[in-house]
Length: 263
Image (tube, rainbow, N blue to C red; front, side, top):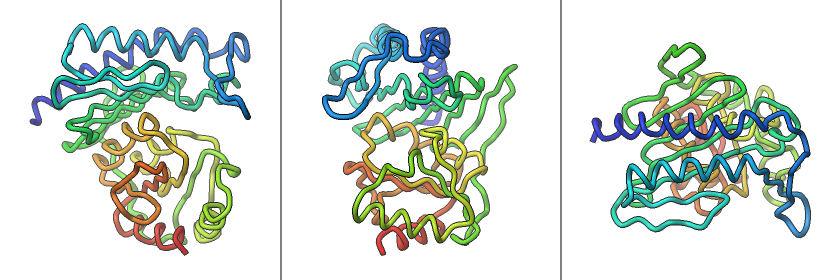
């Protein structure tokens, strides 16, 4: 299994490279060519989203024709075996169209529906984060590879918290996140999936979000866990299907965060 994951990890890196070739040229285009997928509100999609997912799909279909594929921009392709790939070509499209560097490409390998390997690529920063049961690593410009480990923070009052948007939550969720924000040392916003990579790297201690879809979180779970962190829903359970996600540096901090979120 370890050898399989290493081989899949190398292939995932080739997927990220293919996605970069499509996303980086458009990352400074602003609002040019942006479409709104939402009938109410703003849910942007760019041609770079579609082109990069299509490029990754072609590689998977050629190398692993029996693997399933789920992504944000195209219909699912069912698997004929136990393996499938989850793709989010540009996580943080708002950051992408604003010229910010925090957008990412998310790639996950699932075995019978369970995320086993997660890759978070940050093209504008030339950082690639990858994790599975055997550990987690960052590969930065020039090919340098460094092991990742979450922080040693154990007390919620010492924790560095992040979420993508302070207006992400409503009602009971907003009350829960407000309690968590007031309980921690500091809070930063606007990082999208990059925040989870920073938990894996030990630069942040907790990320709490809601409304996520599987392609948003599949890659994040094995990365954070591979670096020694913990992931659950807001109640501390393993079912992430409702889209409520908490990632923390360790189990003790995760349990403390969930207690605060649940009131």
